Length: 255
Image (cartoon, rainbow, N blue to C red):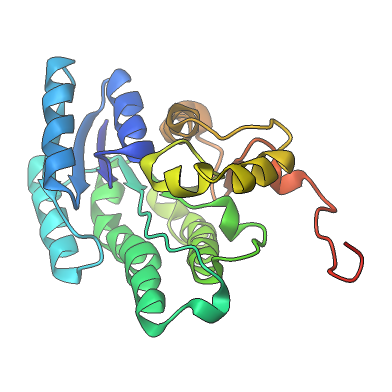
């Protein structure tokens, strides 16, 4: 199979590329960091993986269009898998968000995922077996005590998966959303490095720990396999049970 993974040079994206490559997929990776991308490409070449890469800021419409033109040429107009792994994340209280924060999250998280899905549609349809997987967040499924803009873009991503699943099923395309909780990556380090926050988070997570990138990647790749051929339009949480742990809110008057 052929695959495009956005933001694939580090963290969850990197783990997804490794998992897909282990199944023999030919993969194109884009990332905003040239340094991380080049490091990863050298690493993957040593492992014998069929991975190419290019620099792309997915928040730019022009760069998204160039990316998909290159992918179409590279894979002869066909694509089996699109992993929309976009992680614009600024977690802060709602009253502290500004106009720049709003536009950043909208363009990076939801506009890019929406547009890349549109651009990939003819390639996915031509392949005869197309899959879109959105890397969302548990913050798009349940409420958090901050990060409202981030959460709303991830919630929109989950709903986009539902719509595309219904609209594009006739074209042989499935769409699903994977919603991780905190995963041990560089992006999560500032919060997981805060002992108080970490204790609070793990206290409401039944499995009592953060996730690992490969634990997300294994689900993403499963959703792209024929074994998952009857699964579409779903949002699946990879969160150690956090999203099903009810009755955690405490009213200030009762706390």
